[in-house]
Image (cartoon, rainbow, N blue to C red; front, top):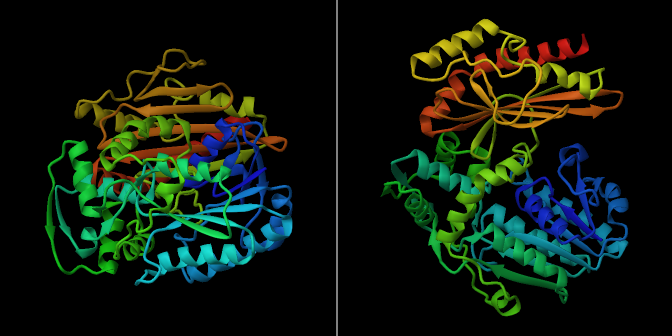
Length: 474
């Protein structure tokens, strides 16, 4: 049995798919099992546990041979180093007591004998704490991970997409050794058939040493963008993090920790991984191209509200940032079965309307027509039934699962891409309706658009969900 922590996170979520493809027995340890409902294979176990609560780990650890430790506290405020140490101590002690044969851990590159940021110092310390229990540990240390949705890649993409001219501080020129997410998964999977002797550390990276500035230039080349970078000797991590919070998906606290961790070189200095594993990582350009090519497919197959390395505690209200996208998530529970709860959603738009603020929807349609958009005049093909591809007022049906899910893609004129999703899940004797509005902004204009109309979103989206709930209950 394999125990996987971090299954709602970036690396863990993608590793889970690979483990399931190999038909391996997987048990996912999560604080909130509902976050994985409908997103794991039938044979995959989902159990409740918290690495900060040692007693909660005993039952999930029973019968486990290999445990993947993909937990971190980058998004936490306060003393995250102490939190990470406590979590690792709890996990290691329970693993030892349960007879776990091996722990596989993903940490960060950095010279152990050099000057490390608090983040990297904590990453190294977690590896030591895990191994101190006596359970054999395989620790992989990686630098920048390139893949759609990863913290570093989303920052690189946002800067390159939104800023034709960039003032770049010193940390942008510090060397790193990027690696693609697919190669990271390959190393983690290879660890399953590797028996460590005590605490074994493998430094992993791609074939090129490249700074964040170089990564942004390479990304710009892949997207045929012309970008000018003006180096400056100043701009502290604090000021840089505040700036990143304005123009990238990172909020300031996470941005500062990330910048602190890349102020020092993060390159491979030990070729043990190359000698041990038959894995030859892809180059930076190929990794970026694969990330861009796979982005829409991965987005369609995964929930954007999955935890990410920068998310901290999951939040479920308007304006929350997940990766490069802005999300407004709301839900309500009603005493009605899913089939009845979904009926108002199936009938939404057209003559039925939008259950709240129909006049405001019409005004939005008129404004869209003025700028050459489709407006709200198209209505819908059938008042009761939907199918993928249907036009629905200013939207188009992108996914439809009867009594369960409706995903609409906006076709109005917007500075970005937008979707509106409704999901209905059984909950006890009733059901829960979840409504999600998602916006993928195009540059600073897109960000400004989202925040300017956010008060209107608060009014319309809240009222629409309440109207759907009232109609379902009636």
